[in-house]
Amino acid sequence: MGGISRTINYKGNRIDIGGHRFFSKSDRVMDWWLNIMPLQATAADELHSLSYQQKKRQIGSTAHGPNPEADDCVMLVRNRKSRIYFMRRFFEYPITLSVDTVKKLGLLRMMKIGTSYLKSLVFPIKKPEQNLEEFFTNRFGKELYLTFFKSYTEKVWGVPCHQISAAWGAQRTKGLSIIKTITHALRKMILPEKDVRQKGTETSLIEKFLYPKLGPGQMWETVADLIKKEGVEIMTEYDVTDIHVEGMRVKSVIAKNSSTGDVQTLEGDYFFSTMPVRDLVRALDAKIPQSVKEISEGLMYRDFVIVGLLVDKLKIFDQTPNGQKLISDNWIYIQEPDVLLGRLQIFNNWSPYMVADSSKVWLGLEYFCNDTDDIWTYSDEKMIALATSELFKIGIIDQSAVLDATVTRMPKTYPGYFGTYDRFDELQSYLDGYENLFLIGRNGMHKYNNQDHSMLTAMVAVDNIVAGITTRDNIWSINAEMGYHEEKEASKD
Ligand SMILES: Cc1cc2nc3c(=O)[nH]c(=O)nc-3n(C[C@H](O)[C@H](O)[C@H](O)COP(=O)(O)OP(=O)(O)OC[C@H]3O[C@@H](n4cnc5c(N)ncnc54)[C@H](O)[C@@H]3O)c2cc1C
Image (tube, rainbow, N blue to C red; front, top):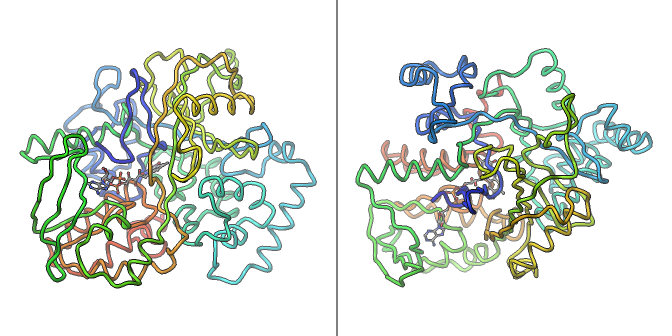
């Protein structure tokens, strides 16, 4: 339950595949989440700027909100911390122009970064940028791009930045730029952010987020329980293999249970698809134009392996007046080019309730790969050995610190903005032609949607049906840089 935002429970230690911050600039989504899982009591001061309805609900129904020590159905408010690990050192994320950064990078490199940034301001690459390399260079300068963006982004995608569409940068880093990073740091010094909605803040700079006590999957398990109580049947383990159409209407789907082999034909008035677009097109029993098939077959995906490692301690720590403490990062971007490891999650810092024994450290080592790469076929033992040795190599653990481990492989975590993506419009307008078929979500739309945007696409699809609106434009414009109404409103704050 929960798709790629489900939570895996390994002996009471929980893995969030990817690390899911619950944060949205859409009130509709924030209210929806908090309606399912109320905010923890100690976060009561966060309430001051929630909408009137929300405040009424929070204060009216639960005087001070549930206490996570006693209740499971509770949304925690967590602080975000994520740093970059590069040259065996930590750098702030996003990178800040501090004395510390200058000391770590060295004066010469900093001067190069400064001059190349100025150059990008005076002589920007002609807009609109043609690829991600140009997008980053225009915003950060060539040198900063080469130092902090290129190798990590290429680890994530497995292709050079100049082959990735600039649209990905626009969606992921939103309006992030050096000027905004500096203004944000100054504003933070003068006016600390108290409101969990953080409407005036660029998404990449958000400092607080909501998080279900037992991980993101808990949200979807709770929702499933609620709707089952309403009499809805949820069929799990059934794969839709064929989609039967008549003209431009879907009549039924054929679904096969992957465990029992049972096959069912399911009819419906409306169909919402979250299956990868490539699979959807393959399943359609229609005469599909050759060019549409070509685009669909050329869509690319990036897959993901996560190794959960339980360790008794890390070699890196935060020094406090009271002694050494576990570092407070939720996740760390591993920029080191000599390891395959992409990101390191510290689940204790997402929610302390995700770890069975709080004296231990529960880590998630993320490897981005293709399902055709060797690493995808490694046995669990080989994968665990690789993860352990890489973490040792970059100085984060001693090999003897590992107490237990598990491996999860997750196909199609990232829809690629390369391959035939530049011709996606043609495929989209063909599929939009099906009157009662709605493409929603992340892989469902082949779009880098986060949970909130994935949810909004579903909500707007239903709004359209209720209101008799037949265009899909307002669904596709969610999370497009210019078209997202609530975000545009928010950026005025
Ligand atoms: C590494 C990583 C980090 C992330 N971090 C965040 C974050 O911090 N914040 C955030 O908000 N979002 C984050 N996300 C994004 C979030 O996971 C997605 O937006 C969200 O899960 C997408 O929901 P979905 O329903 O569209 O797709 P999915 O979660 O992929 O669900 C699709 C469902 O369709 C089912 N399905 C597919 N094919 C078929 C078929 N043929 N027949 C039947 N069923 C089928 C699948 O089994 C699955 O249940 C992250 C994602 C990743 C990979």
